[in-house]
Length: 274
Image 1 (cartoon, rainbow, N blue to C red):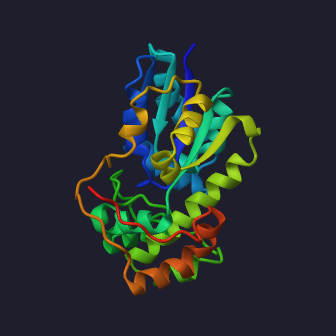
Image 2: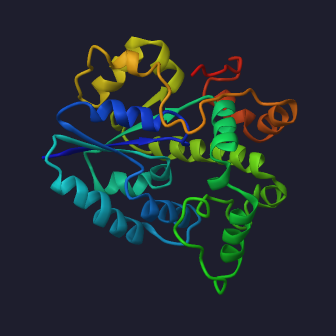
């Protein structure tokens, strides 16, 4: 019987790297954002309460459930930030599934989204189109493209008014803080043996941390696994830059509390070398 696992994160945190590393094992089938054009709109609708558990589980059963059922490998995984909003549904459908909460310094995540994926992540036009649909069901929903379906605060929530004033970078900061909050809250409701918290930086710096991840997933850790984590993956623009002063201030205001909660408050921002 195939054992499922799910890597949940904010995105831009090593999910593609981890998928590639785990897929190298002979008994593992791993995907990066499996069925994304289905799961991304599903995740947003679930987060905003537009659909309930029954509908979410029906869709996940038809996609992830079917894939796991027909997999010929001992382990099946999906490494996807979209699943971060669907943890209760995945946990309910797959009682033996394990979850890895993969995090990265939020300054690096926000900068990566903004500079490398800006055309498909919280751009002004796509955000406004989804906002109009959410405000009025008579306005047609956007197509299931990545650029449209990014979560926004629930109507009436304490951060809804501020979000409407945000620019693209600030919306990305909000996303990073909120998605990690949701992941921690939802995984905290599961038995502790079903989830693991790990920082990308630790996987890149500590062979012991990397072995601990493989052990948690009941997988053998290859001798060359650590070397693979010291090479950036899923890079469409091989460049890195530090946040400027205005971006640092915006990040600290919106996401500083989460940065501290995840253990990054005292860490200097670093530059990725390609």
